[in-house]
Image (cartoon, rainbow, N blue to C red):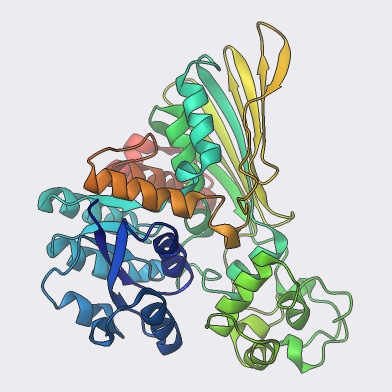
Length: 425
């Protein structure tokens, strides 16, 4: 069995998550070099995967200044830091596993796609929903003809109020200028999956959304700018940081490691970092400008329609109601429920039998999607055997384009004709 050699650029949350696959199937993968600016993270990955010290770098520039040393480069940096290392890695003829979004502008997305085609390399974008067992079953169920022709879909992305406060109010994705529009950062997973299901190009987009709640005018009376400065509402506020980051759930343990910027921080380390870091700020007094809810209406082809609702005001989780000419499918990924109503028999049946070991939170590898994409990456590159989930980077660009168009529509209050929109890029 060929062992696929990897380099990772960005050894934080996403990079380390994909690399966990090496612990399960070490015969398939070998990590040979790391580029990660945070020493504690770099050293952790070095020790865990036996990477030589001389192959551990602070910057991607130093790593990619070398001749090509591996088969695949994992690009797992922050959103605005994808383009430059991706282009350099493509120049070096690396195949890529590229964290989503591809880039924060449509122009950069298409430049990466075009350059990869020119250089003859494969770029797999980390749209992990399509690599989960759950959504693979949905795709296969549709392909088997059980729903007939899919006419419309109602899909919900429940961000979750805690996730919202951590990532999109206090965290790295709070500000569009520093990261990307929230609909792109959070939902290019979803537009990719919806495009995959509909099997026709998206032709029109219309969207509404605002930052309705996480604003200074909604701060309770007497709340300080930072939670650790003696907030009188600490016992009743859902978002009081010293409490949020000590909730004993896998999701919060995941968030606290990001807040402390290290693996497995202690309570004392978390308390200390909350005094100075963005994660200790009052959620009503942050420099966030991304929406906390958004609705996107899409037309596929000439007469098929999809709605996507993204909202912070929920526990969290994705649901899909897929309606076809022969039946309807109601799917709840976090609840691990998928029910099919057959128009012919008028019976409802459970068509998904979940893997009980899967953690359906962001901390659990996206319900098997992180593991699934790595396994499919191996089969795609080593065996030239693309799974049902594999998509070309050009298809990923089109899914991103739906998000860019949605943001354009939200800001201008116009219906976006996708053919005309593409001409403007």
